[in-house]
Amino acid sequence: SFNSAKVIYILIPILIIPQLLFSGVIVKFDKLHPWFASQSSVPWIGNVMASRWAYEGMAVAQFKDNEFEKLFYPLKKNKSFAKWKKDYWVKDLETKVSDVRRGRGDTAQLKKLQHDLEILYNEINGEMNFVHGVTMRLVDKLVPKDKDGQIDPKQVDDATLNEAEKYLGILKQHYRNVFNDNEKSLDKLTQRMQKDSVDASGKLVFKGAERYDQLKSDYANESLENFVTNYAEFDYTVEENGHLVQKKELIYRDPYDKGFFGAHFYAPRKRLFGTYIDTYWANAIVVWAMTLILCITLYFDALKRLLEAFGKIRLFPKKKR
Image 1: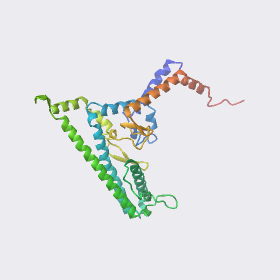
Image 2: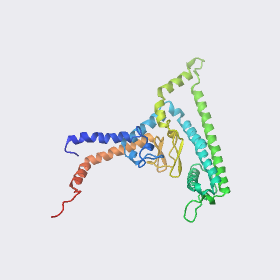
Image 3: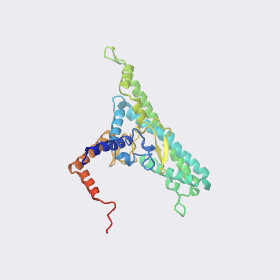
Image 4: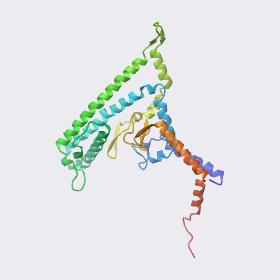
């Protein structure tokens, strides 16, 4: 595409540095400039980088599909998600219900209460679509509007708030049961793996505890686990665009409320047309699609033609004499 090799030498670092910076390894996507940063998903600047798709695919596969972790991953996944829901998500929403109940008539808290009611409405509506069979009857009354179309906390009555508390209490118990069931299953699996194996004559074949420790030593990777679980993050939950966003242990959370390109970083699988695709294969498809597009542009000399077209454009046309 270029007439000089010197131009290529200059372009190589310009092309590679963004692949490093926006791969999600060096700089977290939620720590980027506000123009690009996102708390809940990978921003567009990350989605156009091949390195982001390649790294995430390898990291997720290495963590959850290795010979040790794949035995525990489904149970850990259910346990982790239930833990976030019952200990953080429900707790935050219950706090917002209490704040609205106390401050409905306080005009100084109007903006905060409007924000709290918006989050309550959005999260409960989304949860009803996720957990079927448990509903809140008066959910629409959480966001009553005044004559200007703004949420009016003063119009939220006790019956609506009581219904919200009742709904959240049912969900807390549901996720507590899910957590306890999976924790028990994890304990049973660990005990079964650590049990000694003997043959028909009663002779010891192998010691289960030693085999378990060896398998864990061979495949468990603490540094990788810290990356994919966002171990260094202090907050479990943040607020963004009227929603609560989980910030830790995202490797155990399916993007059930997001599309393919809206999934969070280190998602275990991606949702496409209502079907989940394992992240390793989903990301491989994207990398191959990028490669195919590059091949097409090379075949038709698209970049060279584009540069020649730009070269013919005069930014400052000559004035007629």
